Amino acid sequence: MSAAFTHATPKDAGVLAAILRGWIQETPWMPKLHSPAEDLGFLGHLIATQEVCVVHVKGAAAGFMARLGPEISCLYLAPQARGQGLGAQLLDRAKAQSPRLCLWTFQANIGARRFYARHGFVETERTDGARNDERLPDARLIWERTAP
Image (tube, rainbow, N blue to C red):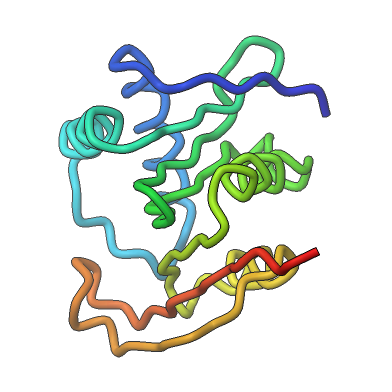
């Protein structure tokens, strides 16, 4: 799929918050903790403090990844953009910029865990969720570039 990538700007916060909110709403096990205004504020904060890469398909934002150094804080795609290789393209861009990437994902998010495993991430830790806002068990995943 042909895609374009841009760095997010404050004007992207609304559409990116809608992508995030859509995933939360469609995920039965995910607690609905925040209002749309809070999601918008969260995305505005990410854009101001992290590197947020937006993937566009046919001129419309289809997903995004936020990263601070090696730490990926989120990667979300709109429903119609999933399964098209766009998440892999976002990861590949990050891998090209960093020899090591790490992230947390919920243990219940089987699809994400499989996706990251296919892309070389290894689980290094599990917690009971006491340290995250959702209070859901999570897993730490790490990818490291191997020497050629």
